[in-house]
Every structure is written in structure tokens, then in C-alpha cells.
Length: 69
Image 1 (cartoon, rainbow, N blue to C red):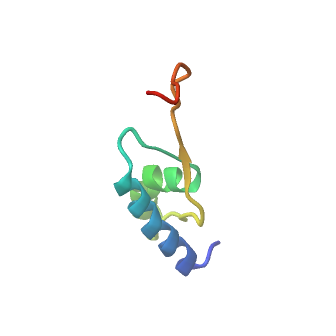
Image 2: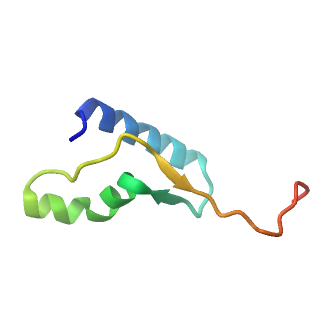
């Protein structure tokens, strides 16, 4: 579905971004699905599950946070 160059580049930068973040990390979208299903999909289909071109991250913001915390 996506050109391999795009998904490989996106995955490379996903790993780079994740390595710079503190846990908990919330990955959304196509990469979240890939990380959850790829192993079983690959065993069943003989090929990796489709990756993603974009990196979707969610952030938890404390509703009581101020610029001082």
C-alpha cells in the first residue's frame, strides 16, 4: 500500500522519537496497529503487516498543570 522507502523511513524516525521520550508513551494510528499485530500477521501471512508513513503520538496533559509545574 505504501512504498517501502516511506514506511522504513517512518519506522526509523519513530524509533528515534520514542528513544527521546519518557514513558509512558502513547503510539496511535498505523504504527500502533503494526506493533500489536505484526508478529501474528507475519506468522499467518508470511509477510509483515503494513506499516505507516506518519507517526501519531498521544500526550497525557494534567488538567491541573500550570506553566510552573
